[in-house]
Length: 610
Image (spheres, rainbow, N blue to C red):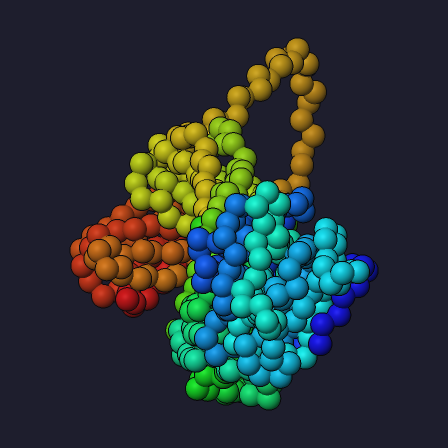
C-alpha cells in the first residue's frame, strides 16, 4: 500500500548513511537488510534510467541535495512535442540476483498538468503489483507544485521498482502532454530507504588453518561467498552453536549489495565456553540479511587448565663457586596437553626476564647462569602445549666465589729442640670456614702437614703456612717468613766473690763417717717407635720418649740396614720426639736412645711397614 504523509518517516537503518561494519546493525528483519540510496552520500548504486521517449522526456541524477532539481529526476524536455502512446520515463532500482524489494520509504516532489500521466512508483510483479499515483490531485484534476512529501510503499515483494512518470492515456486521449516553457510533468526523488529480502543462505563456508596440537584459544581462517547482499560476517562456533569469535565485514549500506560477495579472514575464538578435550568447531558465514551457512566441522584439542606447580625440584643448589645452577624439574601427570616448556626466573631479589627451555621428558634439566654471590631464589614453572602456565616453585641457590681469609702467627727466634707450632685460623663471610690446616716446609723442601708442630733442629730452616678452605670449596693460604733454628746459648757463669782469709782455728777432730750415695743420673726411655716406607723409597722414622730432666739433652742413634744416622735432641717438658726421613735399605729400624751423662741407654727395634 502507498501511504502519503507530511510526517518524516523514521529510518530503519540504525547506522545512518555511513558504511556499517556489522550486519546486525543493518538488518530490519531476519533475512532482510536495508539500503539508503540517493541520500547525503549521493550514491545511486542499484538505480538505472529507463526512458522510452528520449526526444520528449529526460532522466537526470543530482543526488545528495534537497533543493528543487536535486535527486533523481524524470521530466519532459522543454520545449518538446507531446508524447504519444504508453511511455515510461523513470529510474529503476534492482537489488542483487536472488533478492527482492519489500518496502520503500522515500521523499519526493511531483507535479503534472496532464491527467494522462501517472506520477509515482511502478511495482512490476508480486504482491501489490501496479502503478501507484503519488500526485495529490487538486481541483481540476491537476497537481501543481505539490511540495516535498515522505512516502512509504510496503507489502510488496518485487524483483525491482521504478520511480518516475508513466504515460497512460485515458480515452479518448491517445498520448500525454508536455510543456513548452514550464515542465508539464516532473518527478524528483531526494532519498530512498529500501528493504531488501535476502532469504538465500550463503553459497559456501570453509574453515581452515586450525592448529593440530593442544590450544587454549583458537585462530582459524573462515572463507565464504554470498551472491545476494554479500558476506556480512565470518564466525567461529562451537559444537552446540556457541559463538566463539567473529570478524565483521566492511559493509556500505548505501550500495545495493552492501557487503563483499566473497571474503576470507582469520577469526580469533575464545574457547572458555568449551570443556577440555577434543571438540568440534565450525566456521559460519553470515550474509547481509542474517542468513548463515556452517562449514564442515574440524576437531580442535582444547586445554585451558594450568599444570600443577612442580614439586621435588632438585639440583646443585648448595654452597658452590659455580657461575650457574642445573636443576632437575619433574613433570606432573597431564590429562590433556603435555608439558612443553620449563620457564625459570632468577630473583636477586628482583626477578629477571624468564628463560624458556624446551621440555625433554620428565624430569627436564634446566640451567640458570649468572648467579650472584650469596643466596638467590630461582623460580620454576611449567608451560603445557596449549600455553597454560603453572604456579611457581622456588629453589634457594647459594654461591660463594670469594676465598676465605687465613691467618698464622709469626715465628720468633727458634732454638734447637723447640716445639714449633704457630697458631692458625681463618674467616669467611659467606659459606663459612670448613677447614684450616698447618703445614711446614723444611730447608726449602716439600710442604708437609704439621698438625702437632715440629721439633726444631739446629741449622735447619723452617717455614710454616696456614691453608684454609670454605664450605663452597674456595681455598687460600698465608705463610710465615723462613727461620733457621740456632743452638740455645749456654748460661753466662756468675763470678764468685773472693773471701778475706780468716785464720783457721785449730782443727777439731771429727769422727770418720761413711761416704753418702752418689748424685742421681738422668734416665731416658722409649715410649713408641715406628717405621714406614713411602712410595719414594724413603723410610719415615717416628720416635717418642721420656727424659727424666725436663729440658735434658739426649742422643739418638738410628740404624736401617747398613745406614746409621745420629741426631742430638733436647727434651721439652720431659718429652723426647724425633721425626726423620731416611733413604736406606733393610726391613727393620733399630734405635738407641741415651741421655747425656747417663749410664743406661734405651733401645728398641721394629719392622718397617709400608
